[in-house]
Length: 346
Image (cartoon, rainbow, N blue to C red; front, top):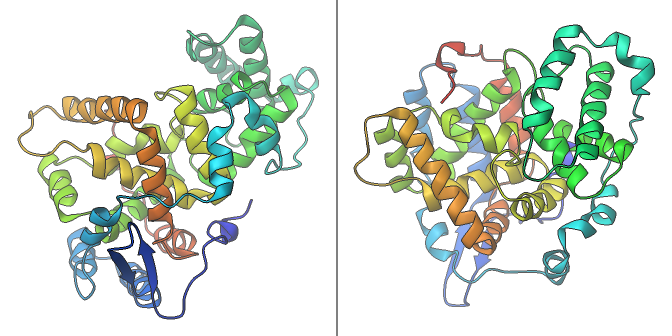
């Protein structure tokens, strides 16, 4: 699935778009103006981050009303059908999106996998969803990861891949289908993430910062500023493992329904929703690790108890992000040098 097809299902009106909820309130956005301004500001943001944030705060302002409007979700019949499916029934639904990439024969390709890559895979396989994967699952997981390392030796293996592949195995996909599903999902939602420099991930954190400045409420923005931590500290699990490292299987499957259908835009939109709903507000501890952990625990509890709200808010926020925005912003930010000094594990 190409990036250009991310938002093909949402028509773009000539002048404005309306998000209706209970019939008594509407939200109108000037799509062309908003998209043009966002990209124009990004293209000149080679100065400081504060200069870019200042530009984004002008003219149209924040989407404060969007979060007050998200009360009565709009669910299409097709979405109701997806929601009623059990996780194991996703096999038929998802395979329509899988790429045709062929899995190499692992036994024949083992010589193309370095000893260090194989060692890291062997370390991570036993600790991947230890409460859920059977021994047969682990054998297949190892083979799929080795196959990918042989398929893309420039990347080899990175942590996070194991968690993503494990979801396909738990849903009953065979070795070949799990490989194709992994390739499809990561190429669409995690482009250039899995390399030692995390170049694509850090680029997308810049994109995320721009989108948070445009679509999050001022309260959430202020909370992030008060916490004084980079966005990637909070977003790592959601972007690098697409939620598969920490979230329950059902929640991951329901999120991936949207990720497969909508691509990267859904990853950004769903994380902004999580920030809005679960970012700690008010006074905080001074320990950065505790701040991140508090957010992750709040997300875990929230997504367990209120998954429908998260998904429905995500669908509505998707309708507010113009088609092509993610691709365009990525093009801008890929030209900026990465700031590795801010990349640290939390």
